[in-house]
Amino acid sequence: MVFNSLIFIFCFLPITWILTRIVPTTFLKNLVLFIFSLLFYSWNDPFYVLLLLISIAWNYLTGLELEKETGKTRKIVFWSAIAFNLFILGAFKYTNFLLGIFGLEGFDFALPVGLSFFTFSAISYLADVYKNDVPAQKNPLSLGLYIAFFGKISSGPIAFYRDMEPQFQNHPMNFTLFCEGLILFTKGLIKKALFADSFALVFSSLATNTSMAGAWLYALSYMMQIYFDFSGYSDMAIGVSNMFGFKLKINFDHPYSAKSIQDFWRRWHISLSTWFRDYVYIPLGGNRHDYVRNILIVWFLTGLWHGANWTFILWGLYYGGLILLEKFVLSAYLDKLPMAIRRIYTFVLVLFGWVFFFSDSILSAFGTFGHMFNFMNICDSQALFVLVGHIPLFVLGFLLTGELFDKVEQFCFQKGFRYDKIVYTSLYLIGFLISVAFVVGSTYQSFLYFAF
Image (cartoon, one colour):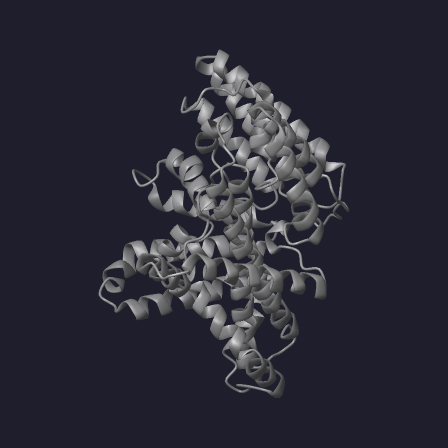
């Protein structure tokens, strides 16, 4: 089940909210949420809910064992549990990739939705217990809800156990938090239904275009699509969590306004960047020693996490190389450049990165780069037609990726405009209705990050 489906918006979400609201105790609220989370996860493929339950049971028992053991035995238990989680992830996600390297035929099975996300959540729990940041969870329902909660299981954000642990016994469903969640959910739906899906159509229409203008539009449309798709999903996930009394941290902070590559990764998919920082980069030694090695390992793993393809690995190492380049060569020069130039520099490098990301092969990626600098064929009728027909979409898309909307929204509230809340609510209601109309009238568009 997905957030941008009519059955979720008008059936699953309200029924779950009403049942959670009317049961009297926190235990029953958590039980309702856990049961409905399993239903949500198993909607299209009930088989994989068994995998989810195995993950919950394994990590619950391991957490209890970690709290009992000491010394070398405790370390063995921890690393064995990590290995088991990574084995499940690797078996489903990377088996065919490894077989392909050796020229062997792969297996025909679907990747379980959200496998990377709930595996990283489980590892977060084990690491926090191992480091004694939190006690082991004695209540299996609480740990099960942390790993399986439908608000975040499909595509994150990756919620850290240490942040969610205090909320299991105290997540009051108050009116203010519900309204904030509803607005965030609507924002995300607008991003997905009106913008991400529209840019997806532009992207697919230019897949065979070989002109320079067409190739740039092709890459730009994907750049816009993946931002509105994933930030839209994150808004909806955080909004849903708020409706049920849980508070998750933001996952996107206007990444296309970044002034460096390092700044971009402080703003894009923040939960993933933080996860790799806390559980890989710092344990490897961080800035203290072997900085270059640590950066390359982290970015190799970041690329591999996104998918079993050489293009993802190259995409990760591309960013690792850029961060090292900024650290040792470009930092002194970047600081002296005007802010506009720094943002353009970052924007273009991120755009190039997305070419690796969306390409099926490295050869295909460099083919796209070749078209982007094909001065022998600057523009053709198809590219011109797409550009002219979608100028409003691109202009509005660029504006909304920046901070303009947030500043206007903040200005209105700071000035205390009369009837501002009525206007504010009305605008979001209109946006919601238009988005639902787009969902009804268009072909189904899944979230891009379900594939990762």
